[in-house]
Length: 265
Image 1 (cartoon, rainbow, N blue to C red):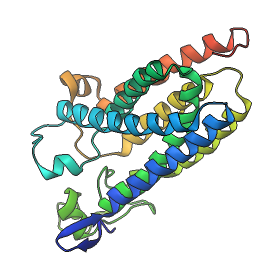
Image 2: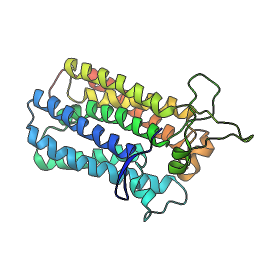
Image 3: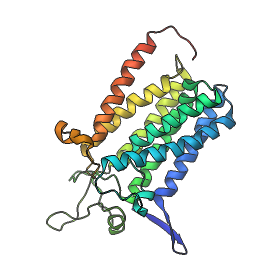
Image 4: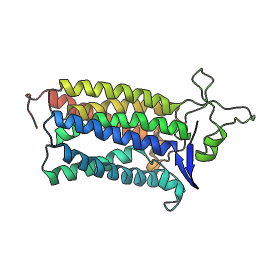
């Protein structure tokens, strides 16, 4: 794992940041292509993409502040952290919603154009998580177990030794999610070509990602906080609670929409 690629003077170029930037650019490229296919103005999509990314970054930091203990908002670690994904999703969603109203664009068509790109960006971004050593999994003796380097431990605090001092192997949850999201990306591209109504791609993303994240959380082991004590009470993580709510609402909405006459929104 290589959390730091190289330095320009004393300024580090981190693998996570580079892959996150690549993921964002590719996500925006995919969104512009799909938007053009649906007859939407490509230049507006780039504007939307930029502000959606900003909204996502702000949202991820806000949820990180409320879910994690002892967060120093003025520290370098807080600034370079990716934050909490669901906070980023919610922040980006509301930024997108406001700007779509401002530009007078059809919301569901725009959302369908962005959804596959979001999945692709996640797939690449999780590769950055793996390189940095964050978002790690539980200890395992399986063939999938990964032993992180000292550099990763110094960078993110990922555990590298067990209680007895032996090398600790962890579930590579970052790669699990990365592979899953590459598959989700392909599925969403297919749905976009075959969709019966505008909004179907976004709803499908919410359902599939909710399920993927809920399952992966069972083998994640990094500290992620506890909103209002719900995680401790229910025995599942904050992200699993959000995943269940998002997936359930999306399933209900999908069923309702599929039962409606075929219309363009």
